[in-house]
Amino acid sequence: MHHGKTDRFRTVFPYFFKIFQDYGLIYENSTLCYIGFGTSNETNNTEKEFAQVMRNKLRFIVPLLLILSLLLPGLALAAKKEATPGTLKKTTVTSPTAPTPAPTEPTTTQPAVTEPTATEPTATQPTATEPTATQPTATEPTATEPAAAEPTATEPAAAEPTAAEPAAAEPAAAEPAATEPAATEPVFTPAPPHSKIILGYYPVDYAGDKAAYNSLVNYGSSMNAISTFTYLVDGQGNLTGTAPTDGLTLAKSKGIKTYALIHNYTNGGFNQSIASSLLGSAANRQKVINRLKTILPTYGYAGVNIDIEYIHPSDRANYTQFVREVKEALGPMGYTVILSVTGKTYNDTTSNWGGAFDFNAIGQYADYVQIMTYDEHYPGGTPGPIASIGYVTKAVQYTLSTMPKEKILLGIATYGYDWYGTSTKTVNYLTVPKLLSQYGVTPKWDETSKSPWFTYTDSYGRSHTVWYEDARSTEYKLDLVNQYGLGGIGIWRLGFEDQRFWDVVKAKLK
Image (cartoon, rainbow, N blue to C red):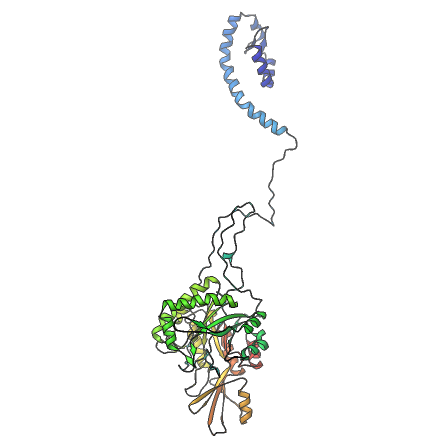
């Protein structure tokens, strides 16, 4: 090996060069550097002989050098890193309070359509001309009350819809997660602390009628929902009516949820032909739904209360289909669907008042079903209790066999009827005391029905029989709500009651 190569070996592999030299494996003369396994005596040999010896020995040395040449660069690099001062292994410290979410692929969250369990109302039997309890007549509201319940499940609770909130992304993520627009839902202040739904029906019978509004002013702290008896539907699916903005504003200021009620009550009664034309046409049903999609967010309603009554039994399947379509359209938007139906004590499929309500079916779609358990005796019929405890109990028990108890809202009446001859007029908490005082009458109590009643003769010599609901009779109905664990009550109507009624409600329903 020439000295130039020796110098290169000495430079590149100084450590091994020293070892080879110490063990006599490298020795030099004036012209050559030799590598071998012999001693320095071998330098006395001739150049030729020594070259032969070295060729034999180099067969072992060369492979060794090749291996070393491959290993040494890596060892040298490692040694260099080890020797570099101030170099620390980087440790990622994760802050427990603010983890950075990994970028996720944006997904569109769509609210699932919740199918409410079948809640089927029992049936009260109102007459076709005088609504059972959903809507009062223009001059004197009858006891046909739209059963209304405050929706829980589907209610557009003022929660943050997950669908509307984009997934949290790290600042580095270039593209925010795609999100579906959140359902338009009004923001409500906390409702009064009731575990039960206490829903009051809010009608406006004529321009300037403030009865329901005044009730809301005086007793609003005792309820947590109202349903405004506002929108008349026709056979083509058109809705007419003016939202009571003063009442809506007042209700929201008290943390009370509001529902838009649609009905077919016109000219003093529920119109069967309107119901048939509307329910029998898919296009007409869709027209109502489209209109509701505008009305509900415009006025901040939490949902809709459907109070279509006096439906022909042949429209039973059409009514169920309408309820299903309303729920499938409005449910994903966060709105609640409430039904007001005639109370029934058995599966009536043939009457004009209860036959169209398939409790098992509609209970699968509605969030709440208010059973109108009043008008047991009604205008045009024979005098008797408005809601005897026996009838109401049977209606509750039948309804419980068709749907979850939490969906059932028990109809509570705040009125009664005064029968005389072939005529009937409505009385209530406010007018009964006046009659008693005017005619010097003391009311009686019927223990069987748990109802108050009395008779009197007017100045024309006509004999009157009056049956009505009061605070005492109401207590027995509220006991049923607690006994069977029902979802709450629907009160027909606001403006007919006084402090005595609300004292009982507050005492019984917590």
